Image (cartoon, rainbow, N blue to C red; front, side):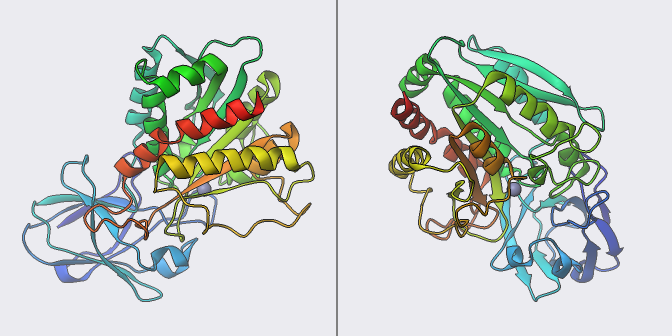
Length: 375
Ligand code: ZN
């Protein structure tokens, strides 16, 4: 048997690899950080026999509640990711699986590779409505890339969409893929109407270094980018510094920041109720967005989610809060589950990469309704 993780977004350390029924591994921490939870590795072995792979440090991971009722994903072709039996005893996360083939990949969620990220950007570039803009470089020397979609013009609303500040939340970039495919579809009426009324500024991957390094939550320097918005620096958090600079230069009428949540088995949004500048105008926009999204997909709900911040108590280092407060407008974090969506479960695939893309596709009418509300 052999286990490897020295590839794009790979993360695992082998502890014991003697017999198929007692393989023991551990997840590595994000660089210069104590966060860990993302795993992604390849097992080469003998097909058609029972394997038990135990992650022995699961109990110390960033979100232990994320392992309750959680099923890991596996793939034979690196395209289709299906769920496998997984159990958590408070310390150990045990994956039980009889592979159909001799080589199999396991991961926390369907990976979204850096190659696919670059493919996405360059496929978008071919669209008439899309421009690729380089914002600068990360600490590991990767490009920070923004897509500008639509023709800037008088009275047009500026809609920002950012994703994957937390690199292990790969569903966020799957969401972006579905969102972009519809926005750039010249035969989609909702997209056409949106591009008449708005210009989109989209950062598909806010944290390319963490993505490639196989991190859960931080960049190359161990910075949690979603706690850097108040005072980002080029030394510690250039990703945030560069994007925030563009937001201030270009302006912003509404913002969506796309994430995944480890523990909650629902899709939901988190707003900015706790920021000093929160007001009835923002609440009105939020209500329009949510009530429309509820009609476009039953994968969205607005009952379960994070507790709302008390007025004035919001953490302004978080993107959603800093943006809402600075631009005095709607700013939502969209959260999707690593687990299955308990309201519409799927035993084979769970709440998958494909479902995440469709959820991004289905957000367009909610954005259109909000843009028209503020016009
Ligand atoms: Zn996140």
